[in-house]
Image (cartoon, rainbow over all chains, first blue to last red):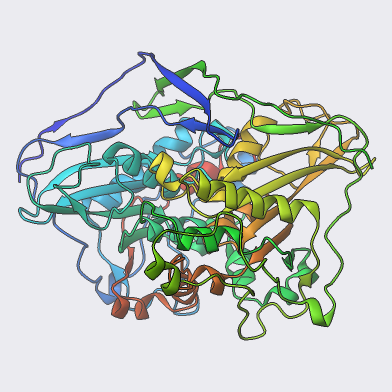
Length: 282
Length: 282
């Protein structure tokens, strides 16, 4: 397997592109996304190895290196407070039957998360691979990271960022079946169809999971668990959010979350019009 | 209550702003969001009326006007196939105890959805109001719509778009408590703190619900239900997605969705480094 890659290495160069701010006919401002590249193209034969095989019993949990690279601080008290975690935390049989070995893509997603922390961003990374269905070659891939603080965007988790970049750059929003004859498709592919799979350094939160599914990506591989993310010092727990989604609306208020369904005579105007309008299906 | 509004009416004018495409130290390209306005400022006393009161028994379901504005098509067969829907569909006591009356904000969200269809976008709208905690006045609000097809972004549902716009324009990602003394805050507010509430034309999907919660918005009012959205001709069902999220991972494969947890020795590098790094908390 040859892994000759053309890395789009922008280095420290700054490219300035025109960004358009326009108003549509209703007067609402809309933004038009710029055209730009964030993927890495694989230009030689690169067979996609697929999802790794199921892990063997003695191998079900990641074993971190004893001293993680760069994982040190001058603050001894802090180091003592949050010692390096060596194993994934798994509870309630949640991962039973879905535990697999490693491959280069999940390692890359975890590495992206690591690089992200070094660059001052959140500790999450995601890689989307585009696989040609005829040749089973990886055509290209996207490495993305959490950009919540960088872009002041609470939705810019690694997986959401990846889905957005891929859809924008391919020009299509169904990433589960990308057709070469789709006139909207902006990047070449050898076979008639291709599809995307996603590798994430951490178990997707409900927002990311749903974003991945709306993009019609049907294969998700993650490494760290929601329990790892909830550990003290990491403090990215989505355990409450998962719990909240599993609770009837009327019972959420006791936790301070108020959800209401409002009765109004224009409630169904949009859907009724939509039914009888010729439109872009998606 | 005076409703004197300064509408930022861009009309058909096109403003070109610089959009920066840069590479960070790891070589990964990152985009820097442009500064731009999409809100409407309320410059006179505008008391926030709050979430509407609970609806009375005979009023629990929206009654659409018999002929919805613009809700007609030349295609008689289509009109017959998808007749106008007059009432919200509610099942399984899902909305029991959370059904409220109408106010101007939920009507505005539904109107935004309606305008969106007219403009060729998806039939969903959302309004975020920013309320000053000292004066209980609405400071400003954002009207947003689904932009999935317009921006080729599977995540650009109305609520996600609204959260993104508000966070970017306010300069903060916690929209549940906006502090005047926050040095990142980019827009003025009279009181020490303010907060946002969201009105959505339709029940949020899991992605939007989680996005709203990540932005720390704790009050959600919606009008059309998930069952309305799933009706033939509307065809935006998230019923399967809600079901999928409530199903153990290992049982999702029978529906074609594959989720795996991978064992790798760099699984915890990012979290371990994050624990011992000084960073922006969020």
